[in-house]
Amino acid sequence: MSTHADSKPWTVPALADAKREGRKLVMLTAYDNSFARVLDANGVDLVLIGDSLGMVVQGHDSTLPVTVEQIAYHTAVVARGLNRALLVADLPFQSDATPERALQASVTLLQAGAEMVKLEGAGHKLEVIRFLAERDIPVCAHLGLTPQSVLKFGGYKVQGRDEAAAARLQADAKAVADAGAQLLVLECVPSSLAAAITAAIAIPTIGIGAGPGCDGQVLVLHDFLGLDTGHRRPKFVKDFLAEGGSVAGAVRAYADAVRSGAFPDAAHSY
Ligand code: KIV
Image (cartoon, rainbow, N blue to C red):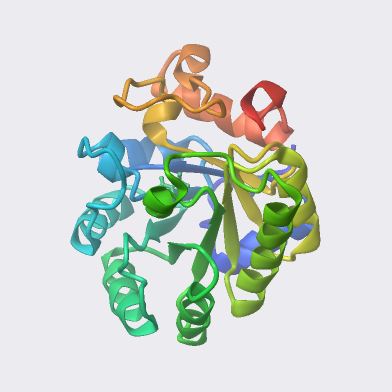
């Protein structure tokens, strides 16, 4: 199986190369230095400082209380553990409400060690993506179930199920890529829709609950280790620690399963 050379650090342009060459991207979240080192040494290509830290580290019911300073703190401790993986950091709730606010927050995160920032949604965020991209800040967009919109959605629900919603998601995916995003996370959307979006855009897609047709996969670290976070376990989560036998073994099992296309299977997709 073809992978990025073990010793070669990932760069943003290399992500598009991977898509063109049909190499799957392996992504996990991390929040501390020790886990960052295990992920980096065992085949993870991208590490995300997700605002999921609000739910799995801080014990909140949503990602809304997370601040830029908290993401920056975790970004800095994780950055010190990485040699190879590309570090992506979330712009937390409303830190990207305007282009100027997003620029300020992104500078804080890039100065803490991030190499790309992730933001949720399209609509008025297209202007934000364009503003950041024009200023050489690599952007990962995030569509589908965007957890910062949980109050609007009324819960964590699969998105894009009906024809109109699927068409809107397809249009949004093209729009974020046209605005300058260089990576796209698709969360909780039907597999067929995620595969169609992946085929229609040039930037790589990373799925979480979006089926095997994406260009890569991401899971939240605590979910992937089968830890009880106090939240309902979504269908797409698989406990790789049970399979891998150790944290390092779990990371290798996950990386192998993503690269071979074995994960996610139908049982872990919508
Ligand atoms: O915050 C996070 O961990 C995320 C992933 C679920 C993609 O956004």
